[in-house]
Image 1 (cartoon, one colour):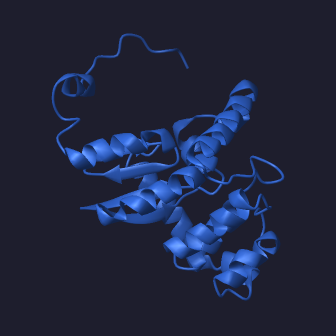
Image 2 (tube, rainbow, N blue to C red):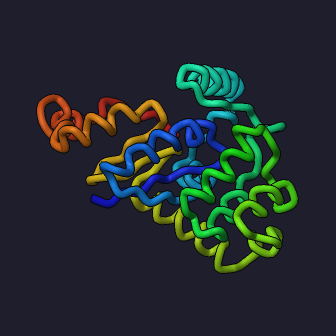
Image 3 (cartoon, rainbow, N blue to C red):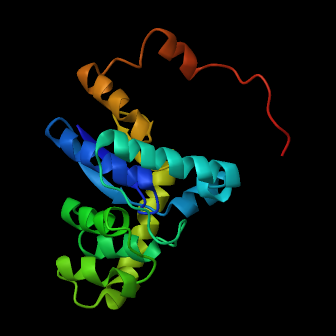
Length: 209
């Protein structure tokens, strides 16, 4: 079975889930798909967690706590949120493979370095054999690929990152990793019982917009 792992480098939870997704590849064929989280938020009319002051503080705290709990080295970049477009395009220019994705994530979240421009991404670009990162991230084909990835994610119903799309289901967030494992153990896990009822649960009230 094939699946897609939608992520954005701006998300610490994408970084935290990355090694867990990689570990599942012997059970599930996973294609990493870099997308622009900001465009997904705009499509759904949502604010990002770092755009709400109290939620921003909690998000950073729980990300650091999850990293410590899981034994994953994590150091936030110098500023957050940051513009992830250059990092996303660099990964696409390098082929969107796991090596490229890991190199960029490590630069940003393991080493805690900037990645909001081609210049700040010179080191991972060099590791990936890209001598001119500025030209790579400016390539029209790379820009089009990022746009297409993001549009495909929105069409698939993605509303946040990281999200694994597999078997007609969406698994959102680092916290959902054990849920993915349960589903792999029993593909019908969320198709019966109360899960079936929840799929058609009526809406009781809607906020005025």
